[in-house]
Image (cartoon, rainbow, N blue to C red; front, side, top):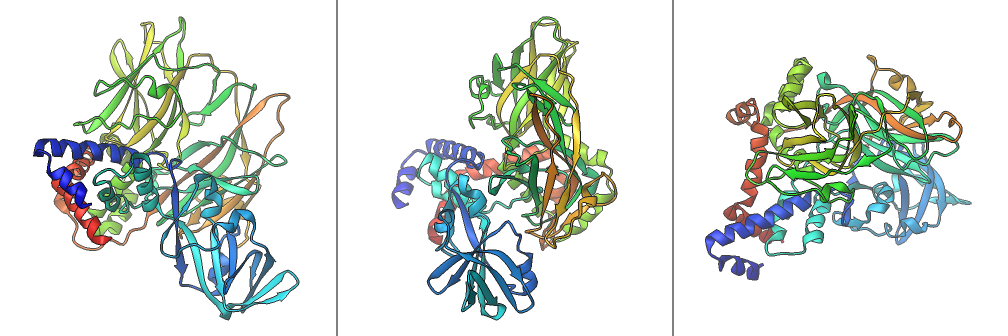
Length: 561
């Protein structure tokens, strides 16, 4: 660290500042790439509550490892009684071997492909237990400790920075910023493929108050139904209250070789010939044509230097006679937006919860207006003879999983031989990996609704009536770890046709925060101004890029080691 400091201080100030800003620009850019990159980390949390109710509440999709002295077993079919618990003992299988001896309190590495196992391991440490055949009988009084695996977002994102760029002079300084990230997202969705559940995305993102309750249509790509049955989970893994009003599958039958996507209103669109853009030029004049033609995690991050918002202009050839185009995007929100909104909420300090309660009485139109003015939705515009016309604003879909999106565009007012589309949002709020447009007419399609056959909560009760309709009844998930397992029975395929399956949910959620102190009222008033959230994004980014602040972070990190 001393050598790095000497190297930087030996540069003239103007070059030193530019060097640091360039490093931070790249560091921040790579920090918020999708979490599929590099290594990931989990951390074990010791559970202080060792009551029977707590043990019984652990979801049945968790994997349990029983420890006594230096011995370990996998224990299945865990059942908890008043004074003991029982389960079936077996030798630790190969997929759990690497998790037998983790380091409590430290960041433990796992590969992305192993996430379903790594993040669902529970360690039970006991003084003694009795065996009857392959059954274990464990007195609750013998239970010493429970360690539960939890995603270590800070260490994971920091590893992406260091793993992608390498340890440049001062890169460790950014870890103190990244570790401070507080995830503020939405319900997580997992789909069962084979023997385990796999994370597929987040639902009704951005619906953070009851007036913003909305529908979400999530493509369930890569699904492997078993005997015509689909199983999935909706979980609460963050500090929030979640209210899910509806959960059903929408199944579309279509010819094999045709892709189908649902737009934001749930209407199906067939895609048979998606054309890449002829041009993709950013607001900074950079050519992103090649970057956005393929789905490969090389994306546009709406991070043009010096601007509070950014855009990319796309150009597609318009076939003669085409009256409708279907814009196809592979996109997601950024972790930077998630972090930034958390910083905004902190400004309320001790009055945050009172403010959040008052938002329930604010008309949805006013809340959506604020989001639009702050550049949070992804704005889609098309250029006509009358200038740029708004087509759609895509609501947030979360930062942890990208998805395919489709936006129908009316071309009747476009007389030129090409179609120009503009995508724009606030500074670093979205990431777009691939764009394309399909001009073929929509095939006659309909989405068949499939209600859940069962919705099993942790008590074992079937609460499918709570998710059957959009009404006044909600599935309420108020605690971290709450999960429900849903089972659906798919309709028969129509002849040789294929099926595309979507999860249709409706709901909203509320953040739980325990801030204290006097609110920053002058700062908060600024957020009432149109565009201030975008300005806040650029200002916070610039603060991280300032040379003195960077040096302070380096010093703080070095002192902590």
